[in-house]
Image (cartoon, rainbow, N blue to C red; front, side):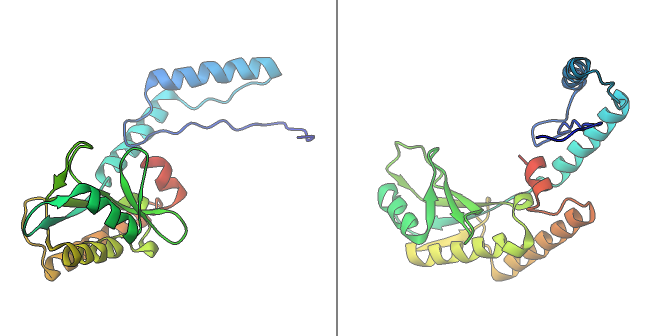
Length: 208
């Protein structure tokens, strides 16, 4: 405010988890841009639509190739758990229950590390399985979301009388969990090489 400008920059996000920018959306941007430039007596410099669409599609492909949701489960070894009692215990352990019913574990700075599902609807009284889920592209390696999630799963299994298993109900051994940790590390390296580091502002925009 109070300064003079001889150029302004307009921007549009080219892709997210749902889709890439399409021709209709880009055309709408150009129409609004022309309305603005006409109003202020300026001339817009507009990139070629074909080039923009190619870039948007390539970026969306990157998102799809790196959209990793990593989950582990804690299965009851005996009777199902009472959901009300379970939720109270999870809250005491540090989980934050959001208004949509999701449970999330935050780090010391209030950022989400991983989430949890009881795998039942709100009316259910019991559940025999908990699922912990790490949104890998949105949690940077320095925060060690995977390590925190596995430590939590092991702690819950011990406290609740359960077993840490995969989605096929197979036991996740220490060796298997170590192999997954290596894969997560490789994933982080790939994102870093693409100049979209996991957990960065750019990654948070794209993987939204």
